[in-house]
Length: 196
Image (tube, rainbow, N blue to C red; front, side, top):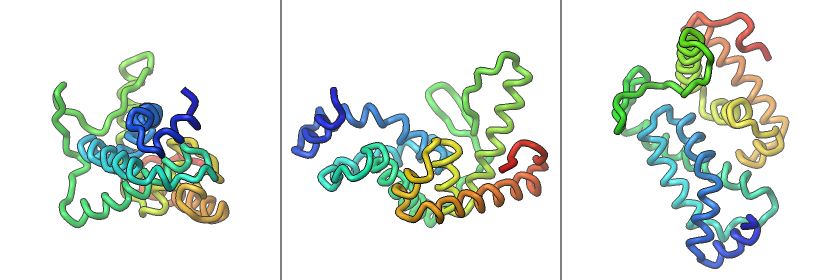
């Protein structure tokens, strides 16, 4: 169905239309939550919080931006708010593995590399980068994730986080510089991996 049609129906309280909208955006919300939290359990909880907030506030969507941009804004703000609460309550080891129905998992992303050696190297690098990204300050982490991982434009990011395009560019530049410094200092990774 047409997204505009679904939005209109969802604003009138049609839960089936809202569910259809969330099916289209679920993966994006979960991936953003996972990148921001670095933890599958927290990402699942954050995704639920985001969906509740979207359901409660869909009437506030005015159509001045793309629906996906509005969803990103709500998702990133909700994740930041919830992560601040979590941070005050507990600390999470970046080296810990988490139990799922399929066994233990760490900070790895599935890789389609042709050989196990290349796959292992890429997986290790992704794990290291995820750990490094999680250590960035909130404003830099959000901007870097939205740009470099989720591929949003500078304008879309500005709408999501509510600042100017110049501020977005500055945060991304500083975030990348901080990320490079963390990777070089703490993980001994440098060279051509993270050139701006």
